[in-house]
Length: 68
Length: 246
Image (cartoon, rainbow over all chains, first blue to last red; front, side, top):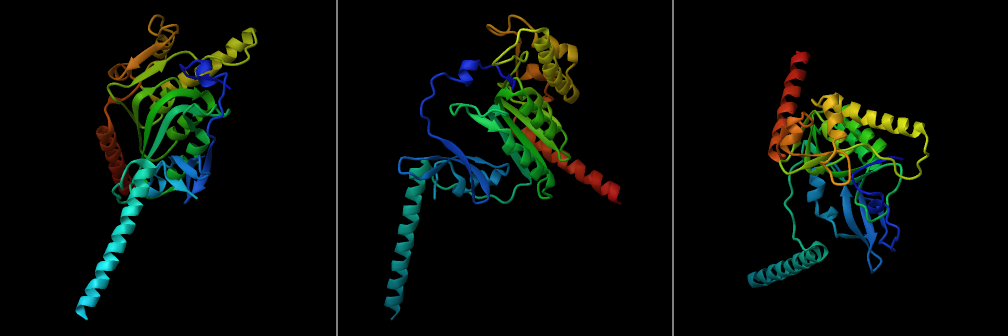
């Protein structure tokens, strides 16, 4: 694999990797969203993947929304 | 009798108000923001390419990435959906995987629907072919594009073939940019191998208008210009279609 970027290798692949909040992609109401588990064990939306600009106005997909 | 019904109505009203208030509080807790207005269906779709372009390898979680496997199906969906008439690509990327970037660029370039791109902030490295892949490209005056040679990361075998391989990779990128923009191959290579422009590196940082002067990007502009151009292209595509049909 060749990375074509002005960033250095260390910036992309840091040596010490902390236990980061795992982010996973899930289907939610027919759209792909990235979610992470919060402290209470619920999934919270991080990011919406959609090309439709109106999806970003839909309160169901707002980042921070807790989904079950 | 009348008083009674009025009372009931009032109670119902209060309950509704309370429910609305609690929903609002929930929303503000989640995002720190109240409701946003709803708009009618848009005939223009948007793809934002942000952070690293992620390809064959899953990058560590602190990288902000755009995964190409998410974008490719969306491009097909945009191409197929008759309600979508145009596509805008928003770019603020530091580059990333060569093959994933080229895959995205080729997909965008081969779409039949009108496309425009806006380079915001940065469209570095592999962001350049993605930016020029659209029918018409814009760059905001403050955005920059870093044009530099492709580098090898990871295990490098010290044989001449390694250089040839790298040169081939680079040629793919250069060829694509030259084919889809007004920049000359010689000019692009000159920018790519320039010394003294970047600290500790070879290459050139082109800012806003410079990118247009070199012929890399079509025009300096932002959202207004990009939407205008897209609407214009959609209109002319429609009249062309009407012309061939009749």
